[in-house]
Amino acid sequence: MNAQTQHEAKSEHDLSIQIQGQLGMIALDRVKHLNALSLEMVQGIYQQLETWLEQDQVQAVLIHSNSPKAFCAGGDIRYLYDSFQTDKNDYRDYFAAEYALLEYIRQYKKPIIVMLDGFVLGGGFGLAQACHIQVSSEKSRFAMPETIIGFFPDVGATHFLSRLDEVGVYMALTGEQISSSDALYLDLLDYHVQSEQFTTLQTALSSAQTLNERRIREIIGGFITDPAPSQLQAMAERLNKHFGFATLDEIEKSLADEKYPNDIEWAQKTLHAIQQRPKMAMQTSLKLQQIGQSLSLEKCMKLERDVQDIWLEQGDFIEGVRALLIDKDKNPQWKTDNTAFEKKLATVFTAGQKQQVEHIE
Ligand code: QUE
Image (cartoon, rainbow, N blue to C red):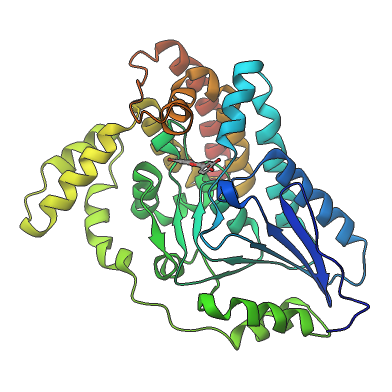
């Protein structure tokens, strides 16, 4: 490796940053938290990308992880919980920074590659989707599990899941994990590379003289392997049968009424999981998938931001994080009366639906 272009890795903001050859590398390095994205990490990535945009030596960027288990487990929900306890308004700054980063990555002028190996959940899934070239291994597991904590799939899921029709609704409501094989089948990924090849691939990328998009794809092409068959593909018929309904009640009824012997156990298990989740989060997640389907990415992101802005006051998110992460009693007490909040939310959705009409016209 060329000594002049090999920079010391520096570690701050829970990121490890280095330049090798023409490749700027950002490793998520908050290993104890499965790389849950702290505000400092979000801002650190943004600032590093800004710096590299002006630096001619850096021709492409790689975002990866220093954790053997996870690319990224999601947003920093503990921070959101704490900041809401201190100041009821502060939490919005976190979402603003996260969305600014996603937008910045999407429009970035140099190619941004992401290498996924392990859990790719929630905010991690959104970050991966925003990157330009996605590589993933047989070890990756993808999910949008937000309804479990009384939240809704955000970070662009209103766009990237809603394009998957019933499968997207299934993923948004149940938070079930899918494999790289499934993600490739759904067109959510570009390349499948064996986990054990990741280091060699990184070396190949950082040894290249030029790193434009064509050259990067050529290099990665030398490492791709066929993934195992997609299990989700095999489930497509089940999912289409149960997750295409307009309301949550109809989806639940359909699962409850499943009569086909091979599917009864799965339908009952799925129904049970759905019924554990707070109604408000489930109904909102379903509605976002339905409205998002005919909205542009920008409008989907705006709609998610508008819902986020009022969400924590509703209470189920705070209760969900309390039960899962803070007290760890795994016994959340969800809100049963959401009348006042539903009115507020309806205003946001009406605005979103109006955009939908304008979009179709
Ligand atoms: C749903 C989620 C998240 C989750 C669990 C869910 C999420 C998230 C984390 C998480 C995991 C490990 C950590 C951490 C956070 O868990 O978004 O700080 O150490 O970030 O059921 O959406």
